[in-house]
Length: 522
Ligand code: KIV
Ligand code: ZN
Image (tube, rainbow, N blue to C red; front, top):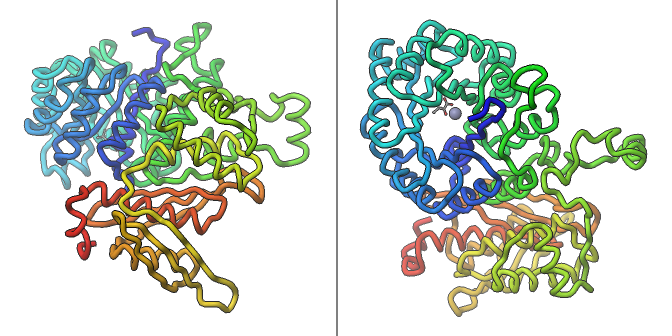
């Protein structure tokens, strides 16, 4: 591979999914993997197959069905893990096993209870075993940045001899600062014999908010693979955010080049797919993007201060270092409304890059008409929310037919609902701490289900008093997490829809036949 290309290794489905509360179903993982392929990532780390049957199955299906990127599976340095990883990725056109073992004194002594010699032997054996399944082998010395440099050099030298092709240097606990991380990469590049035959990779966590800066410092010092996640999802404070790494390299070609005076570094990412991918991951995980998040936050391209707006109108470059179009945000900001016909609606969907089936178009259009009736202007962001809502439907075991909520100062918030359950209408009324709580209590009463509400959030999709509100809830039932979403110009209705959507997902996961036994279990 040429020296000016930075390989993007996406670990949203593995490290990202390890975020507390970010659990995804197999179908959702597949959907994200397909979008990652459209985005143009080079490698998708699809899972940690030995850790559970669902992880194995998700990895196997991604390997079987997603073409384009290399499909990687994670494995500890042990026979069982590597065999499971090898089997899970077997069907992929391009496959990789990513094996790791901790190398820092604190991990080796307290977690592994092994000497450095034992760790080195296990690493070499793991890489050799991985070679029986794949040619493309990545090795990670976990907690590399708190490991002793001589041992790091020794173990990396040994795994190269054993057949490793990518050497990943994780800052597992997000401890180092950019200058230090860059220096570690530079020293390994100069002191590990045979490293020129391998790709050096970065894997930085964000505990001190340095994940992206550290990854880029690694790139400046010779790393040519960056491990990252969409929206920076990941354990604790997350991993390096893919969109920030990619757009930094894209926006600063003057800073990122293989050698001075040479071609700038580049990635294979189709930056126009960044926004859509970010929205999809946020919707399916239920992790709402903070408005001021770099690149993909709602305010990332918004200008409000008078001086800034004036500058932008005179010349965009005054306050904009990249354009919203580059990440796939509709540049023309075309507005649809109640007079937009089906043809205009379908046309705009196509322009925004959605490839919908006839049935999906039909559902989405019906929903669009309902919303356009209440809201004069329907923006691209609204359209994206409508389409996502209609595409990600599961079978509606429970349908919200009617909702009435009364609340106000000095009034006990009360709600009454009608829910259709397999042809039968159930009525319920309840009160709560607030209107949303009352609505949820009434829904619980009507469905006979009471999953724990773990998270609730509401956001305005676009600005203005007629903005469409999107509610996201996360519920826990039977030890599993389900995310539900609802959109409406009325935020209480959006909240109720989100809750019913999550309950439907829970029901779908159990299968229709098990509905009776679901009652009372959650
Ligand atoms: O953070 C880490 O060290 C990891 C390894 C498994 C690569 O995720
Ligand atoms: Zn990690």
